[in-house]
Image 1: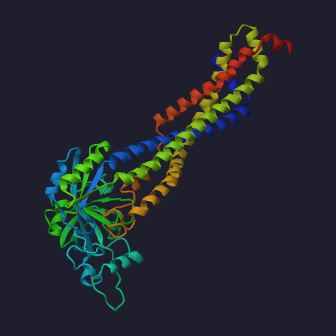
Image 2: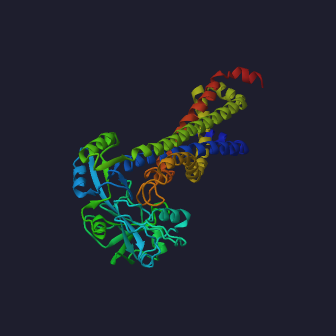
Length: 479
């Protein structure tokens, strides 16, 4: 009988014990593979986070941000200046609008905050915002905070009860299909706006805003008596972010009657290593009295630090589970060597070399590991996503809480921290941070199983070497 056939037969000699060993190994191997999958998923997400957020700078008018503050608006000429700065690979201009429901405005239900130039609802005279009317109804109820914020922005007081208020709808003119963090919009239906450099009547609506107004792709609505068509729907990941819409930058400038004005600029740098230098160069080129250049990388570091913690924890857990599987193999094979001393003695007495006997035990261990790996891989495919989500949610809660203390309630849209649709305290990193998808790809599973087999071979070699110490004469004399 060949060594391989004997090894396979020995693995199933005691079926109850074999089943128990395979079950224990499956748990250890499954945990190891799940942790490896989680580690790889988080590592990939860190790269994505660095690529999509870490190289983005935001330029606001000096002294203003979003709908707050003062200063002079940015212009297309300054966008051209920014594009000429070394290491800058792209500049996307934006124009922010506030849309109030036309019917409510006519009925005088939106308060007195719209009278100031560029003030808009809920914004105390911000110079970069322009308020216009629309047929759309906001998808978010004003609630206590909305009524309080908008009442505070009114320019007059009255003894009568405060009227019911409706939140404004955030509209942003963009020069490319990106949000305020510089990453691509997540479209759930339809297509993009097409030619972003030309005025058009296409618009992208947040999912909840479209649902509130019973709109789908191809539906129409009006802004400032101009008919727009829903070209696509997007999901910003937040209720506030989805109460928004995007149009092309020229269309927004036309609606605001400010053809050369920008509310902000999104500047993309060619690499993270050049972000600091590009920020300094941008500030010098534009002038501190004209623009404020902010770096989302600072908040990104909090998010990446959280993900790095998850990556380290999952790596340590993978090594620990791998070591546990190796220890199980070692103990099982030591037990088998002791049980089969007579069999080993007989084999050596008839001339079987130590190498052949040792190979038999190693192959027997690999048969057990192969069965445990098959079950463990199935366990990992189902458990890796839950494990990664649990690890990430625990670590990201702390990161988001820390960043929220700096961003929440900041100068921007009502209830937002960044001044743009989908604003969040991690400067765009929050949505990416909580959207890690751990998929058990064949390559990762294969790499994990290869590591398990390597540990199994090491664990089986120790008892295999013990066979060399068994002397046939001592075994046979004891029989």
